[in-house]
Length: 126
Picture (cartoon, rainbow, N blue to C red):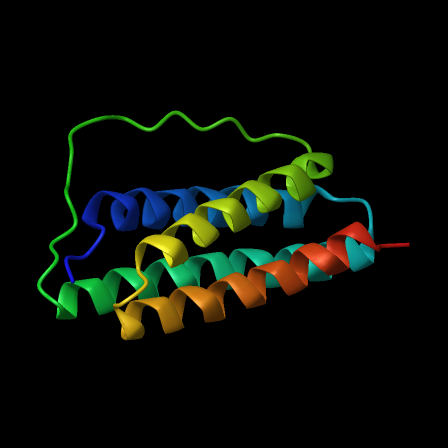
């Protein structure tokens, strides 16, 4: 089966952006429990981007580099839930597109589970 290269590239970029935003939220939240959860989020998002990208490279996919600038707005920590839900949707799309590529599907499902568990915590913070 052919790798969903464009979706892999988009997912890795989205995870890296989420990692940067989550790190910012981690540093600016007023809640200690949110601080801890957001710390886990930026670590997991970065780790997942790395794992997906390196596994795809091992299968012969070379990520596309570009000269485009990425403009990122650092938003308030209150946006963490919405943006984490969005990355969960992106991971679900990549999982659907990678059916038949077991090694990629396994990594994506693991990442989705870890990030979803953090999302669950963020939604239930006191």
